[in-house]
Amino acid sequence: MSKITQPGGDEAEFAKPLYTPIKRRSFFMYAGATAGATALLLSGCDDDDETTNDMPGMVNVGSSSLGVLNYAYALEQLEAGFYTALRDGSYYKGLGATSAEKQILDDLYYHEVIHREFFKAALGTNAIKALEPDFSKIDFSSRTSVLGTAKAFEDLGVAAYNGAGRYIATDNAGLNYLVIAGKIVSVEARHAALIRDLVSEGSFVDSDVVTIATNGLEISKSPSEVVTVANTFLKDGSKLNVSGLV
View (spheres, rainbow, N blue to C red):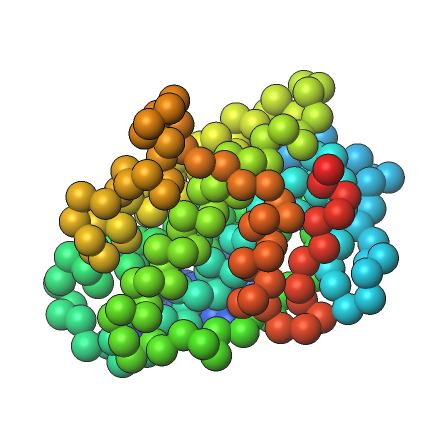
């Protein structure tokens, strides 16, 4: 895999496992615009709202606004881990260096890593642990398997953000969280649309993601619905408990 360098020659370590963060300097090089928002999130976190593991072997994301942030962080960890893993697969490596498909996957990879590091920095000591993925059911040599999984992850991410807003507190800090979540979900929706068009052109607004017959809105899913899927891609000890988000 070719290395990406930044001014000064330091390696930008995006291609790391799910449980390894990228360098602080590299992160802010690509996501410097989020630094102020990160400080804003930190100032609004309640130190008393700690996460616990009241279900043995599961990771409890917590409750209220902090729980939503950890929930989002968990999903971004999973997506970043997936795009990191696919870059080691023969399907990705077989793509032309300048092909549109490769460039799309590269962009999605960088975005998801940045999102993961954003939430990690924002949560600080309130962050849940680094999760361990289980991608054993994905064939990274197969375009169908890779894009099908990417479609599932991106659709799930959009539905998760759409369904999580109701659990954010309505104080000033909570409103700031909603603004940031709204910006991130708009990017996730672009990802979903791109992947869907790679899988089947023109399917980006199909009825399984947009309620065309009624209100024309994006479908949302509750945290319990989302983790039913997400937990199938996480190892024991990293599966999510979202019982605090009710």
